[in-house]
Amino acid sequence: MRKLAEACERIAATTKKLEKVSIVADYLRSRTTEEAAVSAVFLSGRPFPMWQEATLQVGGSLLWRVVQELSGKSEQELTAAYRKLGDLGAVAGEILPSHPGADLSALEVQRRFRQIAVARGPAAKTALVRELLSQVTPLEAKYIVKIMTGDLRIGLKESLVEEAIAKAYGGTLGEVQRANMLLGDIGETLQLAAGGKLGEGRMRLFHPLGFMLASPAESAEDALSYFHNAVVEDKYDGIRAQAHCAGDEVRIFSRTRDEITESFPELLDALAGLPQDAVLDGEIVAWSYLAAESNEAGRALPFSALQQRLGRKKVSEEMMQRVPVVYLAFDVIYAGGELLIDRPLRERAKILDELLAMERTPVKPRSRNDQGQLIFEPPEPETNARVIRAPVFQASSAEELDQLFEAAQARGNEGLMVKDPESVYTPGRRGKSWLKMKRELATLDVVVTAVEYGHGKRIRVLSDYTFAVRDADRLVNIGKAYSGLTDVEIAEMTRWFLEHMVEDQGFRLIVEPKIVLEVAFNNMMKSDRHNSGYALRFPRIVRLRPDKLPEEVDTIERAREIYEKQKN
Image (cartoon, rainbow, N blue to C red; front, side, top):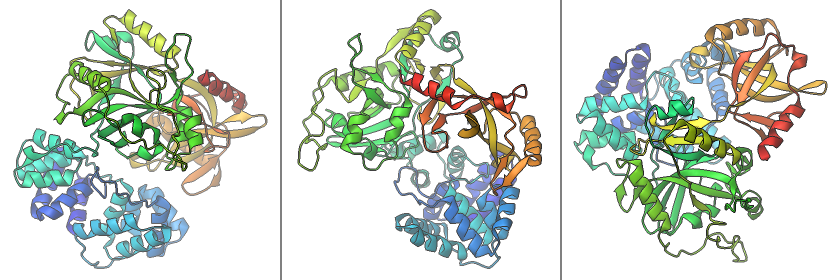
């Protein structure tokens, strides 16, 4: 681990991409294949390969306590070090006592990580973390903590590790990238490269691929400047989900490749029994089955409705009835033993249509209560289906696209997805083949009540702002934003906030509520995160409003109006 930490220091010390790649390649060649494979995972900023379900479940507060205990520093000293460095790993490297260490290998460190991952309860995890950090040098501790927090911060992306593997072991960069994409394991990719077997990388069901991403389009004219005869779908206000289906086994993964199957148990039977093993790409949305006048099967609800379902490991029958969900499928990545990402969208769409239209293989229903009764009746065709093929439209002119955009908004959806029918599926990449047109964001005038120091290049400035609206004669917090202002504005605001601090809470400063901002956001959610009872989704700062007094900021009534309007 010491050699890896030393290599990380050299990587962090240079801004040159080729030099970073060379340092990684030289380090990998100097280790055994097994240790190099684990090191490649660590250099990608994670303790375990992406496809593996193991997580450390070690929070920043636990690490903070262990570092403080091992260093013998006071809370004030630790806070001062964090403000200086902006990174708990860097803090550990600076304040932990120097000693020779036990010379643990990267393989041994990952073994310890696995022990921490399976340990139950904070006490057991704390003991294992303390034991690990007490046995390594401060430099090793620096990078162990960084890996544990998933925040390596040495200017090294996984794409550069892929380049280093190609440089160290041969094979083209494209071959390395494809193998890593299919396997979801940079370590296993390295082992294939070392053995000259990159071509043997195969996609594995239940190991999620990266999602193809979309770029924003400013207007209909902008969208159609990239391609003509666009494939158009509504942009739904849900969560992107990849469904892996093999017979009666179904697993669902989020955009971050975390498994979310247990949060949506009613989708399992709906996705099971496909005539072929398949991987679908789609959106999970909260759904209203109330038929509209147009005799549609229903409509998607705002994200605020779906939020009630997120993060739950156990979902009650009452919750499933109160907030029903559907899976809106709009692409297929794998079907019938064939990876389809190199096929054009028009072909994948035809395969998806045929797949969903085929007769399903009967499977034993799983959605049962303790009495063995079905929680949900079998869905009626077209009216209560839990897997829906996302409707597809065509547009060849800006006028047609604008009409589709207005219709999507009338249905309560965010906007449009505009896609090139000839586009291949590029996992994890954002290009101009898929574009998103979204509605204009709502805005509120708010006042800043608290500020925090930023991260990375912003570790010495106050760049994260908590803000409030008025509720009669008091202020109630409603959100937090850290983007939208220029570096110059943030520097000026930092000076002001330091001069107008009310309370120093270490990471966070309570400030005089005098700075008014205009903030934009996608929508409003009910939430107990803030004392207003609401939270903003994807807030960003539009501009400073020095022309407005704190007494003129928006009210909780205005927030309530926005929330209620979303529901209609």
